[in-house]
Image 1: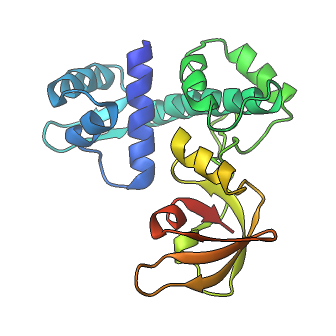
Image 2: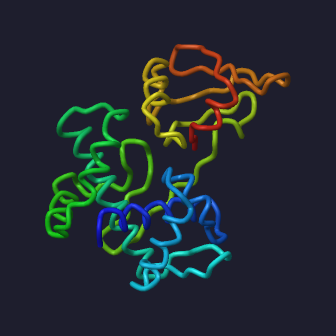
Length: 215
């Protein structure tokens, strides 16, 4: 596959993870910041390779072959993120763009050795699951902080928004994977939260709370 084909498969995979229904051409175009006509052309190519099920005007889904291929791309991306954070001391807000380049390396042997070298991690630095060499994923039960109520306590296990700006905000507030978060107050007016992280108290907006996963 070309880099472009791999990027399309990964995008479709992430969009289908959000919703079980077939993904629209417009949704793919918006996510990839391209024209719908370009998406249609690529979907035809992927369909010819038996990587997607595509019917014009009815959306697209991954075939079993396409789903496994997408998982392998995601696997490489998230393993490289682990490597960059754990072994090269990159911060979690720096690694996504670099991993976007490294995920296209073809060597399966290299990726499997990288997996073993890292101790076969099951989650990346943002708390997202890493598929194993067979495409299996260990799912962690989690909820968004925004779904918690007053006096509940949980552990931060991931983030929904992996943008650099959001991760830098969390660093500034000393919120990281493994942080214990206690809901002190939930404001009825704007649904903002007063929380305690360690010994620190702070107020976060509903938008922030809707992007932090807790268990």
